[in-house]
View: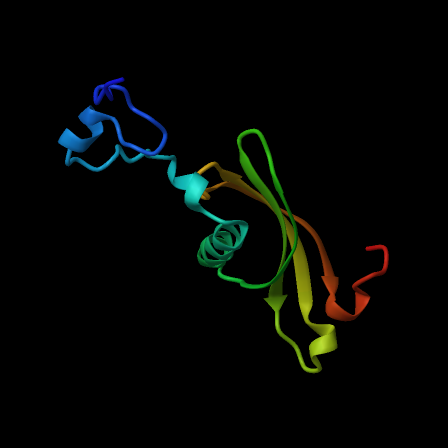
Length: 119
């Protein structure tokens, strides 16, 4: 019985694979696929701060939507002493798939010490 060298076995590479020195093709993905939620949120915080001029205090919620992302953000609109009397505002921020702000809306305004109460 003679051994055939043209048949590839699981332990031996196919002859055409040995001839090719090129690396396998690299799959490209959308920029958003590489973004993590943390990166998306950090970028949105920076952009909202530049757009409104207010410091972002926190991001209380985020969700992936069909078109991108939706965030609930709290900003400090007026710093006061004591800080419990700072004026805060809640914003809803809509981002596209790449993390750019498409729209934002200010919701309620309240004092910091009112957090957790109905506003």
